[in-house]
Image (cartoon, rainbow, N blue to C red; front, side, top):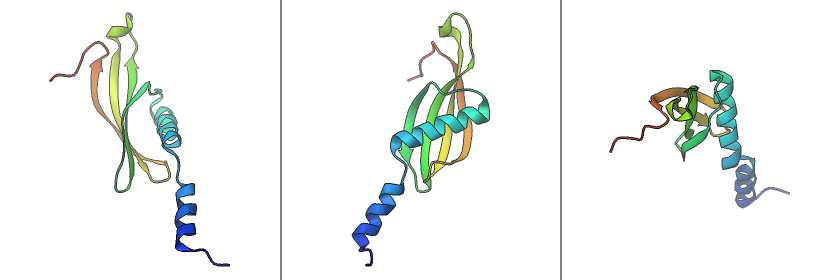
Amino acid sequence: MTDTPEKRDKSAADDEPTPLELLRAAREQLGELTGRTPETVSRFERTDGGWTVEAEVVEVARVPETMSLMALYEVTLDAGGRLTGYRRVRRYERSRSDRD
């Protein structure tokens, strides 16, 4: 019995990681490479080659916590959820808001 195009498309879609699986993969892989566990994700979007995730991590913990030094990392994943690159986009104190 041969697969119809609809069956092939459905099985290919079933093999794709879910958004939650992709976010977990990005978090785990970035943590392994940097030694810092991301606290939050502020961007998650599909790109032509896979996915882009922006994650915030504590780079320098301070007391009080509002003075901790945070960093925003951009992580790129392929379609299967494997990390293909990352870069620190910016650093800031936790208590500082973005400029308008």
